[in-house]
Image (cartoon, rainbow, N blue to C red):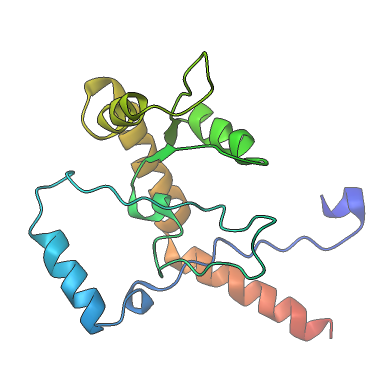
Amino acid sequence: MQNLYRKPVIPVGVLPPKPEEEFKDTETWLFIKKWLDSQRTNSVVYVDSPWTRGPWDTEPVELPEGFEEPIRFAKPMVMLAFVYDQGFYARVLEEKKFGYMIPRDETEGFFTKENVAKSLRLVMEEEEGKVYRENVKDMKGVLFGDLDRQDRYVDSFLDFLVAHR
């Protein structure tokens, strides 16, 4: 790429927070953690949208620390695509089997509660959905398994910035 565009190319990695930086032991977090720990494994679903801006927003919505990257936690995604390029990104993730896009009702185009429930069961419990759970675990290792490599990427980027002020 450097030769083709005659521009420097510097990998900076995925820049995940260090594990010790993820959560502070606030009263709210401790309460949530206690409740989560009391639940049966795979019985709780975290619902979030990585698409937190729209034409109606004036400021970005801050996501809870650590929940912005489901792959980091080896959790497959169950996706609702509503607007803009969400469908495109959801299809890419579904094609790679990192998540499953909830199908819309074929006649009206709505999401039905039955399709939402079937999609959640597929990804979280059923044998057919095992591919999503396994692929996301594999990708977690590729993206987040080598924190030393991520640190080297950042160090290399900082060295470049200092050298080319």
